[in-house]
Image (cartoon, rainbow, N blue to C red; front, side, top):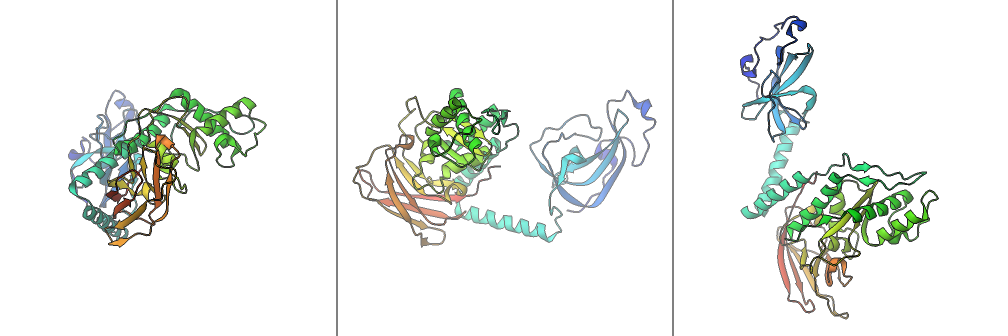
Length: 423
């Protein structure tokens, strides 16, 4: 986008470029800033503004409310503030050329390869267009609307860890379990409910007492730092952890989903939902099962989600196809077993059903392996058919067929995988 020369009047200031404002002391009663100069570069570039504030005019008084974060700019202005100090602001405009406002230069981050003339920018635009075309080809108008809604929901939840602790754990030399902030706990629960909403399940809530117990589980695991163990079985209690705290941590880990190596709430929940490396998707079933409450614990990169103990299930779990029919995030489906979970129990001697997965995009059958049945009662489910569909890809459509299921009619449905950014 070429630069356009603009008069300073359009920037919302009174002084001309390079004009001195006068003795700063004489301006002590001013409430607005005035321009002392400006610079216009040859080409527009793109800038991201995440924290602002953005001001409506170069007088730097009234703030602008906007949800937009990426702008074009080719102009900076230098202003003299009411306190007598000089500051530099970047003018922000839309791609259409409409002036939006001004932001301090340190708040505007130049996007890499934002110059539309650059080869890298052209390749990126072409790549994005290609990906969008592939997604549009795979999805109906209704499915595209669902994808847009899921992406907006994910963006609103966020995946940050800033201020995650109300009290940081102490895990070496002495021991204190610490306490997670309400914002971190709420973000974790919102991510669980994000996936539950996809299935029309009831939203769950964090229980304060369970949060405390889960924090003991996460903190004892983190203090040992040797991996995961329900009940802390196989671990030696460090001398700086009391026997009472150790037993409390052991009890907590017996009734929880556990994971390590992650800190961000969206990443934790995704790991439990995907259940990669686990032949029986029990972690997934707890989060998508008949529960109404949960406890969230996190210490370092150890996570403890307390999912059962001392209460009745909220409801009989619904039949859950994973991934579900319709659109589904590829990140949750591309590295673990797929499954079909029923509330009813199957006969103990039931034969394994016949499972097939067909790639509608490439028109090829997938090689399905590791077909099995499980009745572990995770999340209240009676029996789960689980299987590995092979390597699946984004923007592909898959037809799933499960036949000869004991005490249940055959299942056939189609799932379509899209990419979801979780932060």
